[in-house]
Image 1: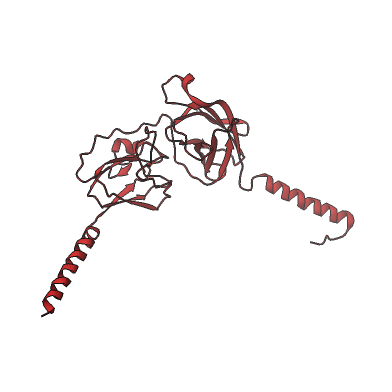
Image 2 (image 1 turned 120 degrees about the horizontal axis):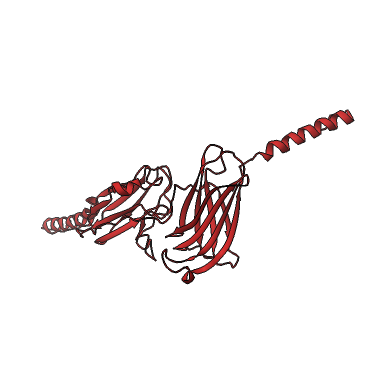
Length: 298
């Protein structure tokens, strides 16, 4: 007599379990590619495939996985380059070449996003049947090239309100290769400073090899690239802070340090000095041995 109630109870519990598992079991994952070459130039903007596909339609509970198929690092960050607040829904931080980042969208809505390093790279996630808005490609105000955080130097502005960090790719100056400078402008707490205006001059062997007097970054991150270097000698990088404000507005209204020059010295990993020092040391030992006729103990 008890078998029927037990069977019914078992059936109810099974149904509850199925209903609980079903949303997860049928949740989908959509793949988005950070396209090859998207960080090198802006040709992907015209093709509308910096993130491919550019617009993704999914259901609540679905996951989007971004895979970096480029040779340089990218981010996927919610918001738009012109926003004062970005990354409030998700922020991948830097996704290295060949790596992936996933985010599950629980709530319906229309989510725009971009790459903080290369702000012309934009995309859109439409969750739950929301109508996508026409996308206007972001146009960076300065030429930008791919970045690589291989070596790092930091310096503070003279008033202590801004930190300038540079990374280089390759890690050290290399003859025959261009040098990419990755710049990051932050406040003393480490927060990016959006709409930083700056000038940059890059010199090698006393000659200016790159100069940009109207640098601007929407997000606090930017990149600049020289032509191919003619030697592996050290490189001097000078960054001048010109204030924080939107391009096209009166520079007198810009805030923060203005005219503050910050210098960096990027040297080869071992450099041309090391062989010279080694040669001098060897010659000194030979001369000392000849004079004393004694083999020095090591």
